Image (cartoon, rainbow, N blue to C red):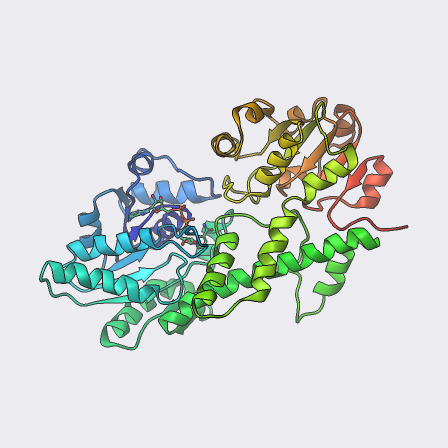
Length: 453
Ligand code: NAD
């Protein structure tokens, strides 16, 4: 099938590469000339396990092309996937300017039937705006062409995006019940048929419900995290181990274990903005989403928990203190630092006068870029970009762990103790057992793990 993907970010690039892997002829459009040049030279703009191989294989096979040519993109695919960013607007609502620009690009050039598939996370009612934008362009050119707008939100996780796309839990598709909508349904059914061989994974619904489903899913996951984080902060006060509680609670099949880990807050490009956007949608309809307002507030506060624990232990003025920070990406297996908790921690430590040495297995280049935006030149001068986890530790007063990379899970504690000025670990992801740390002679500060013995 001929497919166009508009936007080659995390979602667009993975979608394009994976659909090419299934044998489709995929044309990827991006307006970022540098990104397209890099992809055409065999490079990959993001870190995503397995992606490089899939992209290379399909480029070589001629099934995957990258271009900035809007007209060629509009002519190529009968299916036109919109996978551009939907960042938060100033008021927290989803900024649709990129989605609507992509829609206008299609409308300016299409001459025959197309199915426009919204893969970006977009608020309820966006498909109608996309439809109107395309129709306006057709009218301007006095061109008659039929088209359908479908919603197919993406549920892949950064860090496991290729795997998630190739083995999805579910595929949500919203189509309307017009003749064009029925054609869209047939095309999308054949496109996704390879994923449904063993069991049906597609949930068909109307367009607005599909748009809403994506926000509901992210809001639910964010709620579970903030719920556990709030309880973890209480656990620290009352002398309870939140990890024991998590196991006890998660064993109830009505609750389950996933997304109940306490930590130093969620980040990334999706949860924070999607929670906000759903709240904003509700407000537009005169309803306040009280739970989500709290989810957001708890998360904002949670990002400061590590900085506060450090200040409690070493004093509010950290001048003359030096800290090692392991993990900068918002989660493991990605170099994405959007809304990452590490950014808040570093600001907190540097504002209090400390110096830091930071290390992340893949996000170092991205860290250099974003920290320039976050910090003053004077603060940046107090950051050392270390070359390895152990390089970061030298002469530090304590180690602070922010991202749960596998490489940090079983470190050489004797070496850590030898390198730190004193054996103190602040663990923002509860990687270690407090009892083991006590046996090793490490002063350990987890999240919600101050059990009274
Ligand atoms: P991203 O910022 O990584 O990539 C967006 C790309 O779109 C950029 O390369 C940009 O240059 C390009 N672009 C913008 N306007 C364009 C236009 N008019 N024509 C062509 N290209 C254009 O974004 P992302 O993380 O891939 O997210 C895309 C959408 O998918 C968002 O709505 C996001 O909420 C949603 N989503 C993201 C994830 C994730 O894990 N990142 C998961 C599920 C859903």
